[in-house]
Image 1: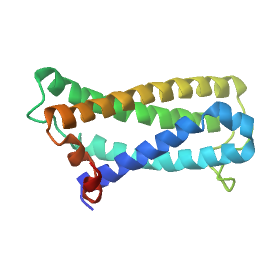
Image 2: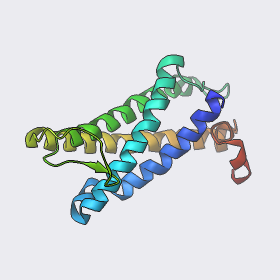
Image 3: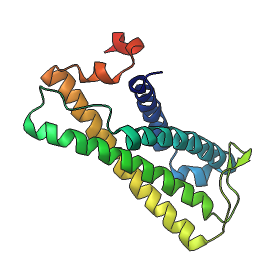
Image 4: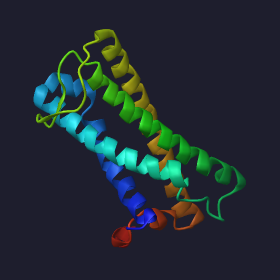
Length: 175
């Protein structure tokens, strides 16, 4: 699979997983119990794998996309900053989520079957990791919103086909 195709699929898989995490926030996990926590941890582990593959591609080869020729000067400056910022933000989100499991006063089992981290049982650090994770997640939601808005603006107002470039070819008929 070509790098660009892989990134497109990772991109859209990440969107659906972020929507899942928005719907099943930490407060819901605590209220709904251990099975919800196990699912949240399992989906988070899968999301973490996606992010590590995607981030490794970025770290080794840089950004896959470039600002289009129709972008004004501010857009050409904003494009790489937004994308690099999102890479670092989602990586921090995944790592802070992992720290919650590391410092948990209980064993966190992904999908209720496999242990995802050693449980050190440091309540103060566990609570801090939860607060940091929630803050980073909220910042990531803002970043994803800016990212989506920027590319929708490009596609429909500048008419530079930004969404066709980012969407796998099999889905072009829906744009």
